[in-house]
Picture 1 (cartoon, helix red, strand yellow):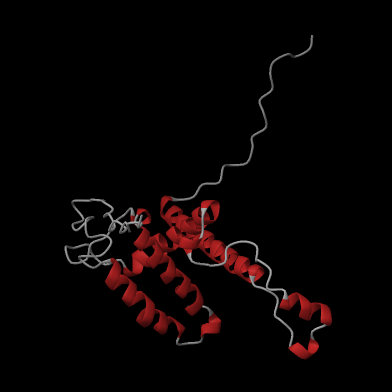
Picture 2: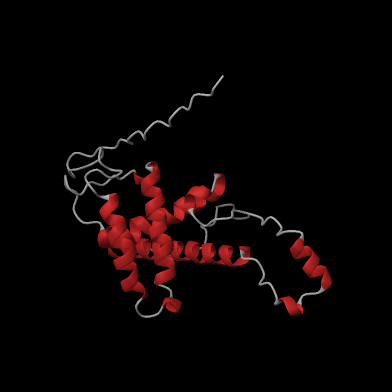
Length: 203
């Protein structure tokens, strides 16, 4: 008589476990890596979209000279790296990369305490002026913390970009004027911009 009793499966490898202390470090390192990959992707996209250098006039062929005379061709993709010039998916991708930088570098290092004289809004991405200023700050950071910027690059970024941006962003009458002024009372409200003037058309 054959043995029909089920055989127990062979024991597999033990599951990999990460301790709670190391999990925070791992998540932080992963977030920083993702932000760096996105930053490198933005730089590569910009390098790929730059036009080829134009050769000197004496090296141009007749055909090239005629093409130049006919006018420059319209470049594919956005004509600006500024976030407000982007739309759709390009805007969403850039905003996600900006949010990583703001949440993992700018706020932990330069956030400072919220007060009536220094408001902040956790939903800053809904304030167009804040998005514009933070994105410009991030672009400058990418350029001035690169090794090609030289040893004075970070100092220049702090003096010419960071300090000015924070003064305007966190001013009592800045874009967050109607938002959180106390950590214990979170608030968010986008202030309405002035209505455009309606010019009357002469009959």
